[in-house]
Length: 226
Length: 226
Image (cartoon, rainbow over all chains, first blue to last red; front, side, top):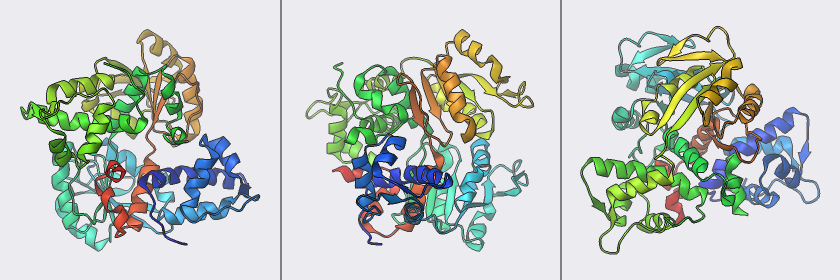
């Protein structure tokens, strides 16, 4: 497939396409038009065509999209055709919650290790995975070819831990700490700033009733773009 | 303050402004230029001026922004000058993790109740809050003037629970279930789709090295807009 520059806005919408296409596929539906996708996803058909054309386009005029093919191709674009090997740093409730999300494993994201600086937590098992002390992290990353670290430590230790992870050869950090990390350019960071999300909800509640915000109810920014 | 239409993209960036302004304020800094903000936030100065002008502008040429005033005004815009009363539906690890985030309370988001359909969990206390059965939810929402429900139930029961919440008078749903909710227009939904975020990281790892994606490392989409 031809590689083009893809905006992060489009990339951000791909998992949602994947989810709906997966549901269609599971229902045994083999092809779908951009209009049909538009109806179930509440995004305009032109947005859908535009997004999918970014990748060279999978659709044919008058036929629509082949659901299985499109599902597989988007999966490949998202890097889901290869296995990812993860550790979690911070064995608190959030870290534990993430380990217990079996959905991630189904997608090829394997949780292999959990680390915590608290000696009281070390040795404890979460879904069969032993919590280890931070001192063992560097060796573990190397020996188990870990590529992604999930950062669920408190804000004040996040920067320090992230630097350790970078030095240990981690390629990607899924950051739940409420701080922006400053790391070498080759390390990918994806932030989940929960407070920011909650404040956005608060804003929309405060603005409730204003027409311009009504489209935001289903959480899609895309609808406003057309 | 003059009310203008504000795009969800700008709204999504406001909490980050608030975070940095809060840090400046805590350091005793009274005023800041868009260029200084640009340097610490890694967003262009023109982006900052453009975003803050959406609200009528708080800055003065040659003076910059008054940190405390701007912090307070953004807080008001985000609805943080009023208290929010929350319940959590789903007392699993994720629900527990959220209850334990004291940061939210500091912002005026008060967790008042936790509900779960599992009788074995009911009666258990999480940070002093008793887990209650779903049957008590409607009365609890009414009696405690709950405005936000946090949805941390499994995907397959999310739609049903969301409809209950809507019928019970909830105004906003913070949805962690991996499904898009179809609800009446007056109910605000803010989604946290963790799988989508992880897939985005996976995409950026797969694309690592491509110049067009280097800017994405610190998680800001904004830098590409200028």
